[in-house]
Image (tube, rainbow, N blue to C red):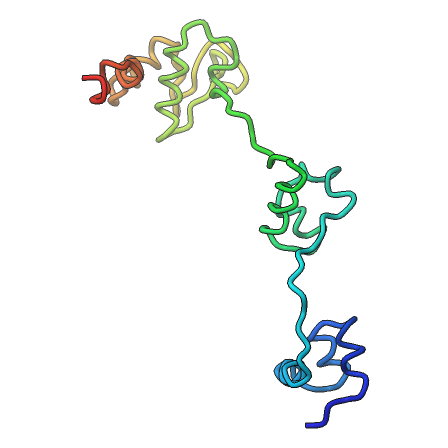
Length: 172
């Protein structure tokens, strides 16, 4: 295999795949020629783009596509600029945010939502009301929803027992 005269000059500006296409040889042969000539790519990390800080709040998937790089590069750039990744804020369940007076009904709804659709409705069962709960095919008031959840194993005071220091074996 003969080594082209301008190989070293083109190696500076082309990737291995581009060199293979330019000379009509396999990528493995490009690697062999590089090894024979002692050509090595420097492992300097890719610098942070100038406009990265403006778009760093976007998701990693979008940033990877925009800058044509990997996840580790995106994370390194965020670390270098001291920008934290976007995190969704912790939110209470929707039922707890709508101003329900008796939160036990909302907690019971959350328990029942594991196995069936449960949402607020009007007296006719249409979505969007705030006085009744639609649980499967039933339309229930707050008390009825709590009773249904209790019948299926929900315990309204369980969270209190779990979160009190006396319940923890560490404090016993």
